[in-house]
Image 1: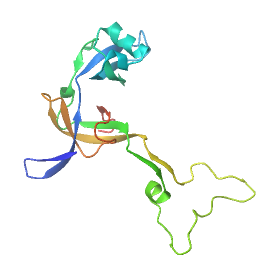
Image 2: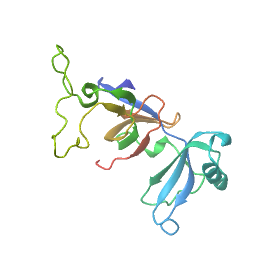
Image 3: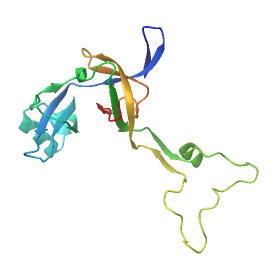
Image 4: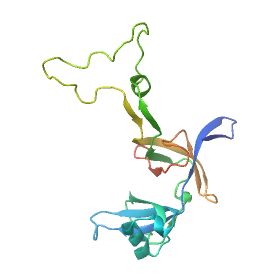
Length: 194
């Protein structure tokens, strides 16, 4: 994340996202697959880093291998063919996007950090409290807020504004924070709520 200044002098917190170039590896159509979608690649890779099915897709398309392979549903696949490069200029300043990614991992955490619970007195030690009924149902119900693994979840932040697009550097500046650590892979889609 960083910040930029608007023309009126206000500070805008932004996340800089590298967006592309993403070659189209496969075009899916209703006739062949039952729906319309584009399969996109991102980040160059060596062929030995890929498994055989992925390497075969790139070989069939005649495209250099990529580390990331994602499918994106589209209204119409007209104008797209295998090998077409999709760059950051598909978005413009003022557009709204949904950003999906995997959140930071926090390891095994307690209920205070994981569920924002408050602590009790620190005099004689306190347990987690009542866990459930005694003889019936004789178990703890699912989804009780207890300590456990926190983070590393798929999260989508909706309706973020695109502040600036730098097509020369393939960078998109989005207002606010997005899920994940620095260098993680995120997916940008046109917002469903805008």
